[in-house]
Length: 234
Image (cartoon, rainbow, N blue to C red; front, side, top):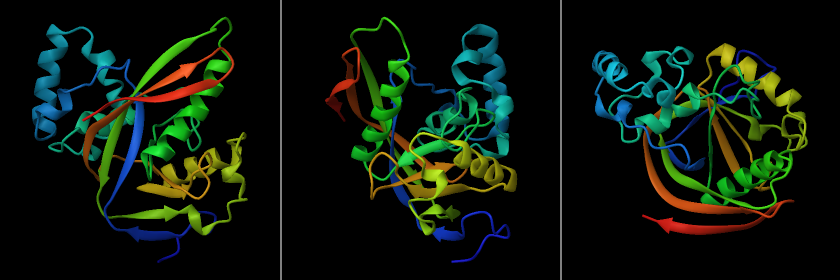
């Protein structure tokens, strides 16, 4: 383990390849454009051709200005999934982003991913007035990540302000500093599943593959997520 040059950041350690899990809303259709090419030059040609014939393509692949093409892992299975978090940035932000840049969040297990998504979905839909009942289907993704140097926030106490269950002030400050430093990513404790691990990738370049796995249905009863059901598995 080596310390970061910036003592205000978590220490850096080299993590061996691992597999994580992620859930995304299935209302967003899979995008295959990035998976159809082997390198940046091929992508630029295909993108220009498809943009001429498919007016929806720019909306589907997101804002390419938010990611450096050199960071796109062309040629891997599920390349489009790997970069979608960086080209479709939530303007409301997330734990480690203020909405100015994307972070690819993955969890150590499907159970952890489900708990993380259930919390955030419950919080979101609680703010939507008049929604008495609905169902939402999420697509599970299995993400393989290669060896890389990561900042490791598990070296910090679980009582650290970055783990505040409600306020993201400290965690977003950390995320902004890590992004500025050019960090690959952050390993940290799951806030919604105590004892579990999560990772936030600030670049997709270390992703080796992303494969669709299980679908889950989340049931909203007007006040909370009242049920979570596995609806398919491949």
